[in-house]
Length: 252
Image (cartoon, one colour):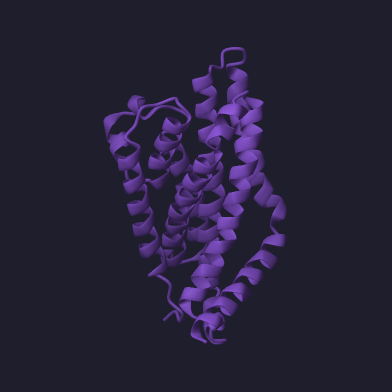
């Protein structure tokens, strides 16, 4: 009976969040799809007729990371921040809805969102830069990899949403952190060219390990896939735990 209630509560939270996203569909499309594709297309124009397979692969991995970072960290961070700071969490808790059901419902929205982002970026980017055959060959692995990285980004967004003290701070931090993570991830470029301090910092970002695995799968890098899978799962788990343990049903 308890499991059934959690499933019903999760579905309710899921529907509520999907309904609220309908009013923000245009900003979502701009942030998650148009902006990353447009940015990468402009970069590719600067190197027209000079794009190698490695450069095209870097751009594809980069645009996926940029899209996921901008949409998921901003989305989950601002969503949680508004629910908490506008006292909507207290209303949800009074139904009552369990914290677990709330977390599952909100997270599922952004997991579905990441599936859309990944599919659009992989297929459109692969076709635009003539590496679609290479991408399709490992698409299931790329999908699983991107979804794991998305959970890590959900955790990072949750850290911001559960700990910011006001809404302007929530919006500012999610924007800054999402761009910073996208730029610190060695996706558009190999990790070897990064300065040592920045390279060390990037090791604490889930998308770094996802990007290195993706580059290996796509044949443009030689990295220890098993090690980076372990680090990706570990960091994702840590960020999820820190983020969602910060949820308070009732703010003092």
